[in-house]
Length: 168
Image 1: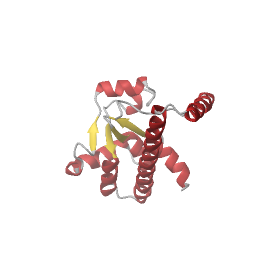
Image 2 (image 1 turned 60 degrees about the vertical axis):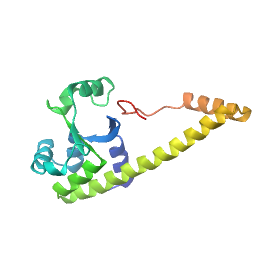
Image 3 (image 1 turned 90 degrees about the vertical axis):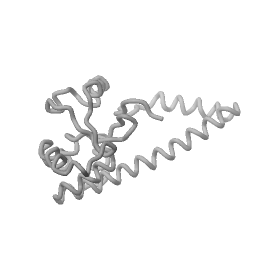
């Protein structure tokens, strides 16, 4: 299994909902190579392992927003039911109820992807704070650097973000 391909496939399926990074039950089932209904059955059989901060069900408004922001192609993509989403801890808990070799390998890749996203976020936030501080000082070199970065960003293609809700 090519780790970079798997991590790219996984990171593209991580969404931000209700201020948490989550993955849809349907996407997890596909990665684990099981049917979504089987995944949900295992969760229901072990519901005590999935408190509300590990897993929650989306409401109609959230699904509509996901469709409007192209996070999912249509409501039919979800199979007609309101999906469950799993936080990083919920994904980890899935490994305890789905015991195939594929589930183990994918779960390890998912945990590594969440860790990399967290590391990236820390570095990004630190850089953003430094830029804000320099901006407050009205430094001439900073303004030139900012202009060059803005031009570079404007000319580059930005990957589609699958972010919903408000981030702090």
